[in-house]
Amino acid sequence: MYNHRTLKLITDIDHLPPALAASISPEERAYIEGIAARGGLPFAVTPHFASLAGPEKDDPIRRQFMPDPQEAQGDPFALEDPLGEACHRVAPRLIHQYQNRALLKTTALCGGFCRFCFRRVWVAEEAPFISAAELEPVQDYLKVHPEIREILLSGGDPLRASDERLEWLFQELRAARPGLQTAGPRLPKADSALSLRICTRLPITAPDRITPELIGLLSRFSPLRAAVHINHSRELSPESRRALSAIAEAGIPVLVQTVLLKGINDDAETLLTLFRECRNLGLIPYYLFQLDLAPGTAHFRLPLKQGLALYRKLQILGTEPENNSSSVPLLPGNLVPAYAVDLPGGGGKIRLSKKSIAGETVLPAGRAYLLKDKDGKLWPYPVD
Ligand SMILES: *Cc1c(COP(=O)(O)O)cnc(C)c1O
Image 1: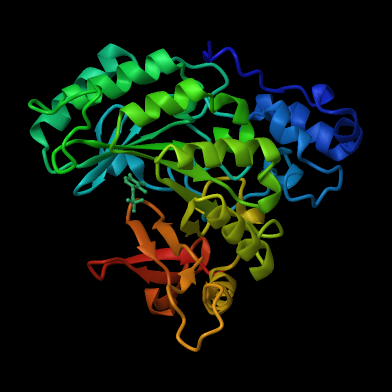
Image 2: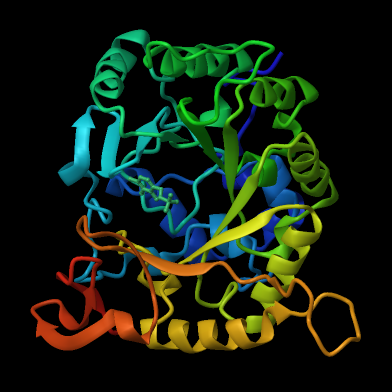
């Protein structure tokens, strides 16, 4: 039976697959050995994800988990709390930023530490799942905020918890809404049930976690969908493909969130291959995120203007007429997700287009665009 100890992370570079361990340069080793002393984001990767990486320094999988000395370079724009979650926190683990949906940080455990993680201050190698005492204020809040229709279960990675813990959490959340049906053979009424969204990367980093029992559990708690973080088609191993299509085939909608990463997926062909393969597996490309301003991640940031140009290209190339030779394209399959950014400091998500840029300014940190939120308020985002 799966529990949080079942997944063994590699936390020592000498325990990586031999070719990968041998690829670590003296500079990388020195940097990695100093992370703990500096209080930086630790090194951790699942054996599965490590097995997908090549030994080259610019390998798109290796770069996502291998600590890089460039992380130590200062970034004057960096924010400890890049999304400004503190401004929207309504209970210790609950963030309510948008009217009808809220986000719950269920655990600080994750399936490895992505080097561009924006929750780098939150995630941890050892941490308990949300407790009954911590859930109580969340339930109290949900009771008096019926406008919340969906709750995002985030982390860390909620699927690090056992099926039993997850079932308990789902039941408790649904129970917070009096009159609503909890788990059972009958589906809750679609217009009244609190919808659940499981935000996870384990189908990619640890596809073994996606057991038939877990899929059965998720199916019993409809309305529920999954949001899976996938950045490159190389992440779609045969095991991950099986796991993802099993979720989709169970009738659970699977959204895909991709982070735009310089040198990893910042070209049209790489992204379109990813989106096409996701679509072929029955998944829904949902967001392409411009990078958040977390400390130590500037070397992953594609300048916004380049991101916008790339997105333009995706939109032109990514609208595929379905296989039909008639002149009227039936059901054009738009593969391209929304390009979005979380406005640094708590402005929320906006869709990015040329029109998002209202101006440019010079701040003590450097040159910045002024991005317009839905209310017309301006938020700075670095030019470079
Ligand atoms: C991203 C996010 C959501 C969900 O937004 P969608 O646009 O529905 O994906 C909800 N709450 C918070 C705090 C978020 O960051």
